[in-house]
Length: 175
Image 1 (cartoon, rainbow, N blue to C red):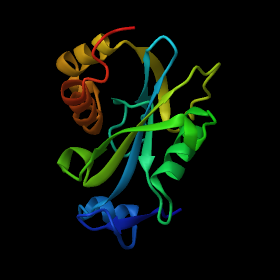
Image 2 (cartoon, helix red, strand yellow; image 1 turned 135 degrees about the horizontal axis):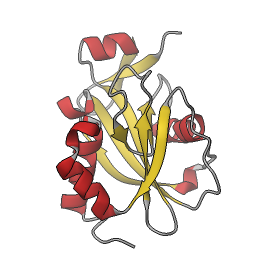
Image 3 (cartoon, rainbow, N blue to C red; image 1 turned 30 degrees about the vertical axis):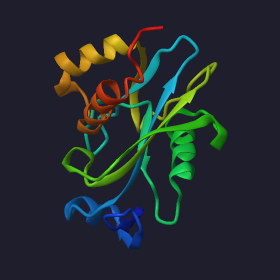
Image 4 (tube, rainbow, N blue to C red; image 1 turned 90 degrees about the horizontal axis):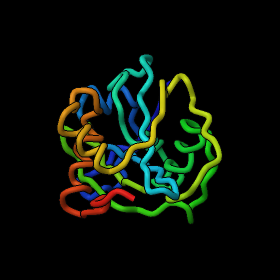
């Protein structure tokens, strides 16, 4: 099945509908979301992407992430990705936008909106075609992972997490 995204201009305004293949092959600006799930102990959930993924297989990344489909909003995409990848149901009021990223090489020419969901979930049902494993981390363990195991992390995750940790100081202490 062909996936369609919105091509966007430098101001994130929709220009036209394009295929996923064209977006990545031709480095065309498009949209994506990344969601951090943080439990009541302050731990952040990461996922290890499945070996079947065409981009960054078996690399650790945010709790869930994905492209914004053509005609879809960032919020709709974040809610959909949480349901599809982790099997969790969230609503718009659960999502707190914490960062926006402009297109660059590290994000695959994507405008990215990063959200956090601060909520305790009883269980997750990861989609095995998307995720090989999930694990909760303290902020210090994540910083250590970024410094010492960068090759095991997706490029977009490293870019996003380093920005958040250094500039916004969001995850400065372990809870």
